[in-house]
Image (tube, rainbow, N blue to C red; front, top):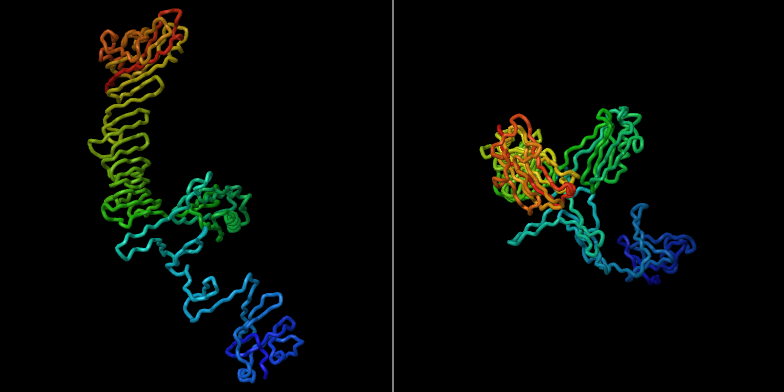
Length: 576
């Protein structure tokens, strides 16, 4: 036979044949040998592609393989089809290209994936991005929606590789995005949020017919943003408890950030990726529907040493076990001893900040107080609780400064505020200083303004109350100080006393038009008849003390006074 095939040689299924794609009949290519189509056709009807040539036929002896095989289509991209032993096949399909492509196969087999070098050269390579130690790089905004570790209870640890030589270990950095340097509005960097796992969140429909169910609400708060779902508007309490749960679950499922399903009467709420805070609430009575929240996980930042005395620690947590043996929510900065680290019970039952060697600033002892001191022990601490500032040493050095139920400020010689009274005083109204029977010593201070003087009007005298003294008060001393020089009247005097109508028995009438900072009462001639140092105004009743202002010119009355200011001081003791 004469070889007329000139364009291609193929090796299929181990059989060598040569042929020429000479024509397309009814949309299919056929192979022609010696001018005749192979495959049983006449050249004018549809012919199947030649699938094989008999290796032992005479054709083999007359045809040698050529260098290339070319499959050419008319107006569509061509394909190369390989049949299995039956009717199924595999197609290699070309597509429209901007230029010719040549792929060069590897010279040998190897484990891995077939990769390209970008120029058509193919090789075997182990793919990146797989395996336990794969590197992640050039990621866009990515949410990892599947667990990074498999198996319930399996821990996930992210850390830098430890050095294998005497080299400094690498740092690990978890950092949010920076603001764009050219920004004018969005100039703040992004937050980094560390959050523990969210506890179980469920609604349980106990009785859909309960009177509180109609119009009730379910509130879902996601990352601080609350969404309210109202019965009758978003969900329906009807038919049965199960049907009500299905309706409520559908309403909650529509909220971005969570998903929800109903299992019989229970609505189970699951946080979506990106939800780090989730709270639920309802207005229906528990007899109609309950809302149950499990405990959220904690976030702890800790050194690797948790028990050694003096170990450096920096921890942030909102859980009971985030700080090892600590049984409270607090931040620890600095060094903490074993004894402190093992504290449980009530000593650390509230929020707090431990700073350097166990100094605590925070809530302790199961109460809403502020403690400043060493290690939270019952010693060497100053505690601010409500209206009380006290020590907690439990010894003779204790003291307390507090306001009691009678609105009295006291200083006592123990930490409870119920011990012996050292001193106390209370201001009950502007211009009125009152003290109670607990007082041993006290100082009453009353400042006056020019407006208070002119408020007396077109009169020549006026009495301004300086203090109300309780029973058993002894007046030890008194002073009247001119703070600024008065003017506007021909004369103006000021006096102090408890006896009407002149009120001169403590400080006699003294010139108020003198220079600023003039003090009356520090000289014998300025002291009234009752300023003896032991004046007991009344043993059973209160006593009012007044400052009296007097002008003598009938044409210039108190309403004309200018710049008159001053201060009264009264030193007292109260009998027990």
